[in-house]
Length: 121
Image (tube, rainbow, N blue to C red; front, top):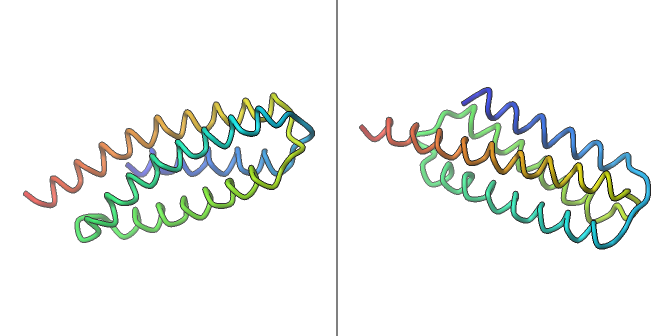
């Protein structure tokens, strides 16, 4: 679980930083990026809600990691909304990274559910 969470956080931080340092681009790609971010945010919120509802069964370190991830996602959202100068390639890279985060969140959700089940037994 720790490796998965670390990978997710690393990816989010990388594309957030990359996005903050970008060039110029199209509004269509920006909207596509916002949609991808919203999808990732929804997936993150689903796992975070699961953790919050079962916080007594979840390790405090994991809760802290998800709190940090929430802050990072908020920073990423701000960067997407404020940055109108990204290239299409940079938007595509962010969209790709968000897709990877979605995949890892699915794995994280399964692992969180397993941890909750184990605590209830």
